[in-house]
Image (cartoon, rainbow over all chains, first blue to last red; front, side):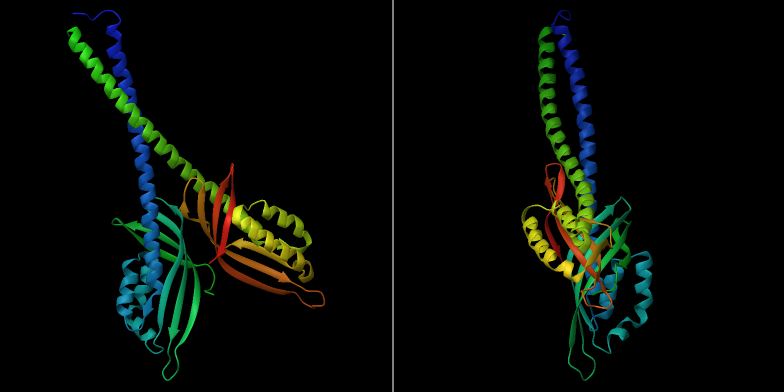
Length: 169
Length: 166
């Protein structure tokens, strides 16, 4: 048995170092996972905003009901009720002028994203084509400035409000 | 514990310490980089907000100061482009008696970010008043735009290296 002398200190000292390194690793892992979660959240929020921006600007008189369903699927709260109210006559509004709107998302930026709520800015263009009975089709390009609020519900990010920063130009 | 067993245990713990140390260093570097990106986001957004206002606003009565201020907030390709714009402004703004005031119409938002380059999207309203010599009343208008700025880190500051109206 040789528990005395120099050799007796090395093992306990190493165990202390080991515990310290392990504690540091845990702290670093927690930090890294927090950051990953934040990055994932920003991506998920931007993706949800992009798809809803596209949904509200991509509407055709031919597919009105399916288009509205797509809008509703990405919406919640105030935005959802605004569109849900239109459900009974959505197709009737688009039909007379054979309205078709085709959206294109130019840029999406995240202002803030907490675990439950987010704010996103989206620049969208939409080509709106109308063909009133007996007339030639007419197209206009609209430039939208959307400021969206999103909330997380049942694991999904949904848009609860779209504010337009000024009239489309 | 025999000396032999103790020696073996010491060696095992020492080896584990080395492995842990390596993992600690890798993760620490990874986190440090992540923290730098987070810092980049907030600093670039603050700089972008100020730069958008300075670059997109001017007053014919203080044109030289306005341009010098705006110029100091640009770098790279956009610095060259802005110099060209500034030349045109100097030639025309005084004659038009132009005052243009840019105000943000949305909070600035981050499109993408690395530790030294951040793309920022912001909506801007540009209110302008122009009254050329001889005109009885000034002409006013408001232009709404969607401005995407690439912010690049230069030393400790963030400057505009690209600016595009979408």
